[in-house]
Every structure is written in structure tokens, then in C-alpha cells.
Image (cartoon, rainbow, N blue to C red; front, side):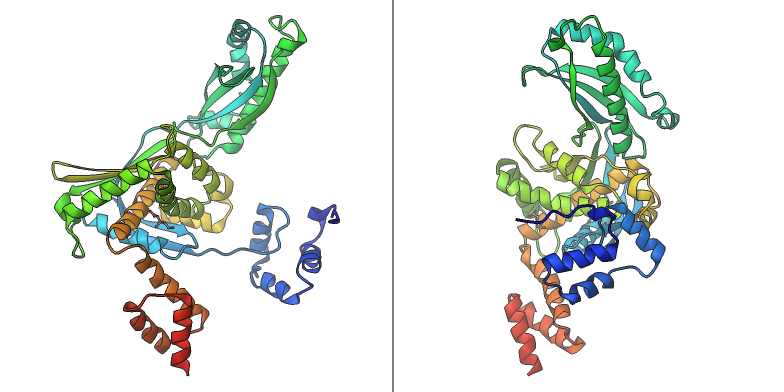
Length: 437
Ligand code: MEV
């Protein structure tokens, strides 16, 4: 049986590593060298990173890159991206340049409201809980007046609380649906603190209220938590051009547009294609979300749920050809912040925001929607013309050559050879070995 280790978080970093190497890694001392290699010499900086989570033993690097030439609402941007997948930044840069020559991207924030729920069990009479709620609603607002004071000064705070009867979907299930404006903050902590306070007040008032005479009918809070589904925190990005302008690299604009639109129609019909299609969009979105210190899991969860809003999981992008004009757009919910959380703590997240000229949360929503649209454009452009592997394998080839410590002359010869030949790991290794012999 596995032995339980107690008080682990209180051990020093060295002790934690020693335990892990002894119990999981055959006391291999090379592991310690690898972990140490990624420690930062700057002790303060290392301390900062150690403090983000518990039980840190090293740092995990991801490449931090920039994609230039984005024009969004007539403003130039260089977009920071943090991602491990080799072709994503190249794809973003390709789309940025392609659309820069056609007037760039437009983007607009449609709405910015976030939400959370106090989930309640209540098996009593509906009229009783509705009239109780009406009576105590001002007290629920009052319960968070201290918490929301600062947010209110900045024009945000709790907007409304609704009591929803969801008993048709689940027996005895009610909820307090709360809506918030959190301005430039992502606001997760703010919303959760407000919800917990509202829940406490709700329960306290319910317990002593005359409406709920017998114990069975007293409403009871199950959980209180923000929702990562934010369809009222919505942004749209778009590009448009006469169809002839899509002609490039020997591909006719009209033929390309039709194939492109068809590809989106397939994604709208077939979930297996839609998930991959949207994954490509998230390549762009997540990379910017991470580079700016935001929570990519919440964005991922919310965006995919939005893709299913019709009851059928679909493409997040749309395209049309009307009167010779090609229009291509994305509409996604994204809750994020440009102040608070990691944005102000992680030096590279701060840098990511500086590269973007310190945008407001609304502006960052627009930039991120564009990054998603650009990524999808590059993927569909490649898929509907040369296929995706050409670009992927070019980067893959470079990675293999780096791994083989290839010399500049070996790199040149190998790249030339594989322009005409299909890249595979073993073929590249064999080719380099032949050069070396
Ligand atoms: C790969 O990370 C993303 C793509 O599969 C997206 C797509 O198929 O649309 C290329």
C-alpha cells in the first residue's frame, strides 16, 4: 500500500525534491540537476514564482513570442504569445500580414457582464420563497456594500440578483443568479466573496423568517460560486474584403472563399471537425491569455460551452460571400482582466500587457478575439490549399535539427533536401547521419 506523506507542504524545497527522487525516480541525481537548471539565480524572482502555487520544485519554461503586424480598429499591435506548439506564432504572423494589406481587423465588445450563482435547495411553496426574496433583496445588496465599495468607485459592482426557480429541471433546485460588472479586473475573487456573503445573509434571514415555518421548507444553500460561462461578456472580431483580394499564392479568391465557407459549414455540422476547428482558434486565444497572465482554463471552458449554445457544438467562426464581399468573423465570450491577479505579479505577464500598450480589459478582449480569428484563418487557409503538414513539418524539422545539434551546413543541406521530401523523424535522423558519415 502507498505510504501517506503528511505535512509535505511545510517541508523545504530541497526536502520535497529529495523525497520525490527517492520515492519516484530511483534516486537519480541527474533529476536534481535538471530541476536546478531551471531555478532562477535571482532569489527574489524565484521566491515570487515559488509563491504562486504550493510545493514548487522548479520552473517550467514555455516560449514567449511576439506576432507583429496586427492592425485592429486601425491601431497597430504586436501580440505577445506564450505557447509550445511550433506553428502557432508563424500562423498568427501570416494572418496579421495578410489582413494588414486589406485594412486589418475590426473588433467590438458587445457586453461585459459576469455572473455567479448561489445554488439552493428548497422544497417548499414557490410563492413563499419568492415573497421572502423580494423582501430581503435589499439586505442581500447591503451585505456586500463593504466588499464592493472599491469596485463601485470604478463604476462596477453587483448589478442585480434574480431568484430563479429551476425545479422543472431538478427537484427542489433554486438559484440566486447574480450579475456583476468588474471593469478591468477579471473579478473572480471579488465575485466569489460577494456570493459567499450573499449566501450567508440569505440563509441567516431564511432561518428566522415566518414564511418557512417547518424545518423541511427552509431554503438551504448548497454552493456559491462564479460561473465561467459568460455569454453576456461577449466580443466580436471581423475581417472583410472584396473576394478577388483573397487571390494569393496561385489560389483564386473565389475558389478559396467557397472552400473556406464550406469548411465552416462542415464544422457546423460535424462535431468531430468542430472541436478541432475550435481547438485551432484556442491556439491563438490561449497563447495571448497566458502571455497576459489570465486564466486560460476559464476562457477555454466558457468558449467551448458557447460553441454549444444552440444545443449543437459548432464552429466559433462564421464566413460568408455576398455581393462579391467576403466577410469572416468570430464571436466569443471572454472574461479576463488587465489589473489584479497574476497580471500585476508575473513580470512576463506585465511585459505582455506593456507590449500591448497596457490595454483595458475591453481592449484585451478585442485583441484576443482577433488572435483567435487570425489563427483559424491561417489554419483554414493552409488546410484548404497546401494542407497543414507543410508548415507544421517545417517547424518540426527545425526542432529535430536542434535536437541533433546540427551544424549550420547540416541544417542548410537537410532543409534543402526536405523541400522535396516528406519529413519524418527517422528520415531526418538518417539523412543527418549520412551527412556525418
Ligand atoms: C492544430 O493545433 C490546429 C488545427 O488542427 C486546427 C484546424 O484543424 O482547424 C490545424
